[in-house]
Image (tube, rainbow, N blue to C red; front, side, top):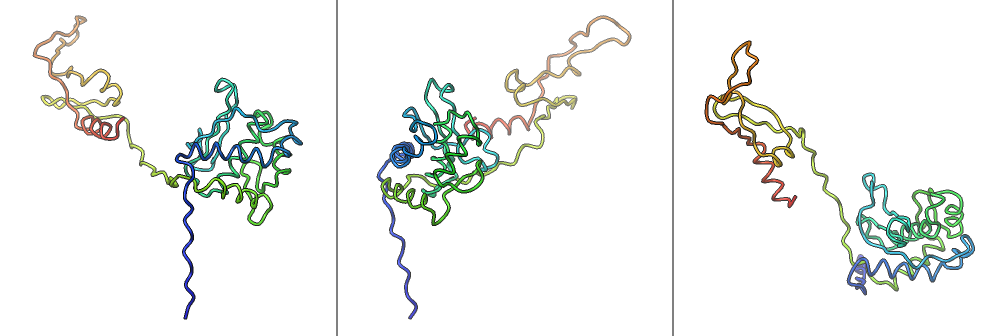
Amino acid sequence: MPTKTKPKKRVEPIYDTREAWLNAGVKALTEAFSGTFEEVFGKSIPAEVAVTCGFPLRERGGKVIGQCWKAEAAEGVRHIFITPRLDDVVSILATLLHELIHATDENQHSHRGLFLKAVKALGLAGKPTATYAEPGSEIEGVLKGIAKELGAYPHNKLNPIHITPQKTYMLKVTCPKCENSLRATFKNLDLFGLPFCGTCTRKKKVGSSEPPVVVAMPVRMVSEEFDVARIERELKGE
């Protein structure tokens, strides 16, 4: 008889939020690697670090999975973002460790100099811009131990759905009386409203330098495209 494979035991979360888990991860990583940071930078990981789960600025379609902002960007606090595209705890901790190197280095050496020295000292693999914990390596074992202490990461991996961009931003506006038409942006129509038709409400004598005069009641133009776009935006909460 074929042997039945045992289902993986579900790890229960200890922390209620992703931020709590990530900030606990910072403390655990600081305790585990403070000696290495002291050796490379002459100081440990700074205490003024705030970590959250969110998309990095200019994530390049998911290629950027973590980002660290300088302390002066937020009144002395170094902000770190970990992409919601990740859900593997070892990958998250390895990415967090990468960003903590930037935080300790004050983003001074980018992915060179002391940053690269710290990456090698910690045992992270891969390119300096995309480091990871290699399977079977010593650092992977340490990160797995930390992950076990932290419990499950309270997060469901996010796979962004890319919305097809609008083909044109110019919406057609038409006069219901004379069928005169023009195109305008949604922003201008929303800001100033639908325009009045200038063809069927104003008339100018040929060869005259005098301004045109109103010969009929103003006729407001209409736009089905604008109405549809406005409803779509309201449904999306924009």
